Every structure is written in C-alpha cells, then in structure tokens.
Image 1 (cartoon, rainbow, N blue to C red):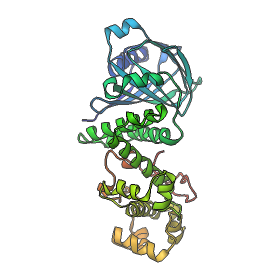
Image 2 (image 1 turned 90 degrees about the vertical axis):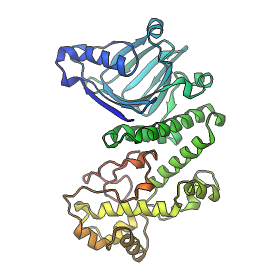
Image 3 (image 1 turned 60 degrees about the vertical axis):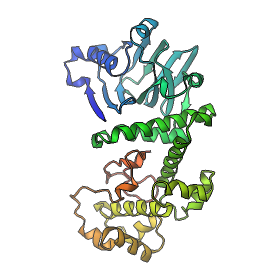
Image 4 (image 1 turned 30 degrees about the vertical axis):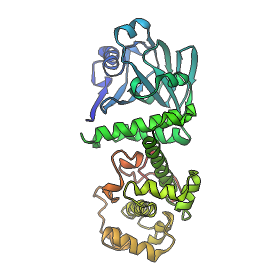
Amino acid sequence: MVLVTDYRTEDLPVAERFGSWHDMTARALIPNAIRSDHEADFRASARVLNLGGVQVSALAYPSLETRRSAQLIRQSDSDSYQLMLTLRGGHRILQAGRDTTIGPGDVILYDTSRPWHGWTAAGPDTVNKGVMVQFPRALLPADRLDRLNAVRLPGREGMGAVLSGYLTQLTAGAAAYTEADGPRLATCTLDLLTTFLAHHLDGSALVPPQTRQRALLLEIRTFIQQHLGDPDLSPGAIAAAHNISLRSLYRLFQDQGLTVAGWIRAHRLERCRRDLANPLLHSRPVRAIAACWGFTDPTHFSRAFRAAYGMPPGDYRHWAPASLPLQAAVPAEWSEPDAGPEAHPQAPDATKPHRGTCGASDGYIY
C-alpha cells in the first residue's frame, strides 16, 4: 500500500516549526538530535512514501546538524539503512571512522544502527534538497554493505543516473499511485538499490538474477528514452551500448510480452503526438516533428500514427484542443507501474524545450 504524507512547517505557527520538524523526522524517519541556526523560523518540507517495508522521502530543509548517539540507538534501533541522494546543497557525515562530504548528484549510504554526526549546508537563501530511502538491513547482506558505509557514491552516471532519475520521479509522481502500486514500487526500488550498490561492491553475487534482469531492462528503457530522436537507434545499437547480445536484448523484452522495435515506435509516436498537440509548435511542419523523433519516412510515419491514434497526424493536430490535458497514448501494458521513470510521466510543460534538438516539451525526468 502506498501511503503518501506531505508535510510543510510553513503551515504551522513560526514558534512551532522547528520542534514539529524534529518530532516528525523522529516518527517518520529515525530519532536524531537536531540543531540549526534557523530554529527561530525553520522552513522545511517532506513528502514521505511508505511502500511497505521501504520508505522513500523527498526532503527540503535549511542548514542543520544531526547526531545519532549510542543512547538513541539503544532506545530506538530500526535496524535499517538510509541512502541519501543529494539534489541541492551539501552533506557531511562522520560514521564508522569515515569523514565524508557529498554535493549535488552524489549518493551516500549510512547505517542507522551505528552512531553518526552529520551536517548539511545550504546557502543563506536556499535549502538542501534530497531524496532518502530507508530500508531494512535484512533485505541486503549487511556484512558486505559495511564497506560502503559513509562512502561518496556518484549518482550522475551509469546505474547511479538510473537510480537518481527513478527516485526523483518516484516522489514527484506520488499523487498518481494506487494501493496496488505499493508492492511493485517497493520491488522496483529494492531492485535498483541492490544493483546500484552491487556495482560499487563489484559483487554480482549480491544481486539475484531476476533483479539483474529487471534493472538492466530499466537501464535500457532509459537509454531508449534518451535517444528516441536518433534515427540510427536500433536493437543492434542498443545491445552494443549495453554489452549484451541481440538475443539477450530480445529476450528481455519478450519476457514482458513486448518487442524492442514496437516499444521504440510506440514511445516515438507518443512524443510526436505531444508535439502535434502543442500550440507553440503549430508552425512546425508535421514531417519536421516526425523527423525530430526518428521517423525519417513521412509516409511510414503517417501510416503508423493513423494506426495508433485513428487519424492522420495533420488531422490530429487540428482536432486536439489545446485546453485538453494530454493523455498517455502508450498502451498501459507497455508502462508497468514498476518500470521506472517512464512509468509516471509528468505533465508536459509547453514553455520548456526538449533536451535534444526537437524544441518541444519533454515531460520525463532523468
């Protein structure tokens, strides 16, 4: 079951804000002793997702200092790990004989059953932002994870980028989740965490085969989403980029009841449909939008679009009212709730350009 709790200290009287934040984090996260230079007017917010055994929290708060003492651990030991992805600001933590500082884009793992002393630093007019995952020690081999305690881990490349994009999207899209999504999201979160940590341990034995397969599929889907506009995107290019055989790539998608080419085509068509419905792009020729998303043959694109949406792309552009919200056109079975960033797209912002050369709204977070 997905339980989403949104919390803002600014909803409270100024005098109650810091104390309320201290109590909330003790209940929802882990008991700590906290102090801050901003206690007189402590402005912070949290979105906490309880996925059942796994908890993911998007946090924003000013500079502060935390201590988790041996006495606090004896009083309340959750026997869990916390993994923190920093999005803004910086963190420093002392634990297990290590003194580690991380900045935006970095990830750090720490053990709630060991004492720590930590600091977060933000500018005078900004706040720290990050996403924290708390999960039981019993779910992963604790003896091996000790090697990663309080170690700076990169979150901008490889599996780190996949994990960071997923966690950011997971918390941003929380309002759309249903009760049935909880177990699937918990599984996906643990799969990605396990694969990410195993990569830094150089220990494939840490990762069960099914977890490796699901994580690889998510990494491949992210790669495809980032290269949809490349007309040379093909199963062969995808397999080569991930150092697997074509046969292995096909099997990954077949296990989900999909084909590689079909998945690429459906998501390219969805991006084209969004751009055709975007009033800011009405002056752009249909063929230019199609070419932007990898359709080099206008006739083939027109046939594929009509087959997917029931009308030619030119007719759709004139029919689609700008006031209607864009609906996902990718079949539901092609975007499972536990599929990662693409499973919960954000509403497109027509004022922002694509990351590539297309100049339309993207709507995906990576």
